[in-house]
Image (cartoon, rainbow, N blue to C red; front, top):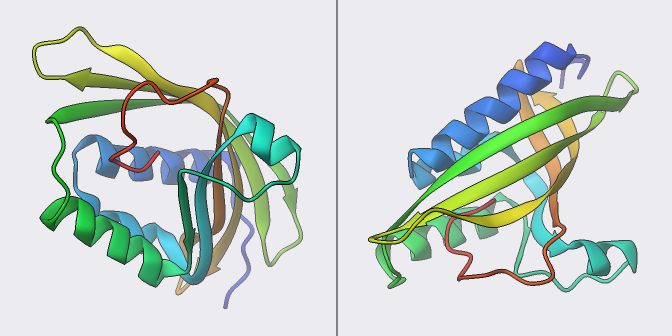
Length: 158
């Protein structure tokens, strides 16, 4: 593994690239943003702050992310929707040369067929990022949402 060191602009581009894949509904490309031994979860702020693991999406390892993507694309039945991710406040919290800890705020707008767009989720990303083969990858991504509850189903990853 090479050094993880990256600029804030590079981290911002990495976040934007990941969001663009989700907004384009290119779910097959989503797992490429993660390491094999990753942790990806979408968790309420309350559970996160209390140290609880319960989360609507909790994937340990890239294989679980691939499984979720496959089941969403090929098996799950859900009302057609589109998402738009808005990311701000990107910060590098620490960088020890091997791993970057970063955070950012997010707002996700969901548009269901024949309905006005609505806020699906608002919160912050808490990430641990490394470099693999010269590319940034999430070792851990926690999408900590501030909502009291999720208004509709959480189909597409946050």
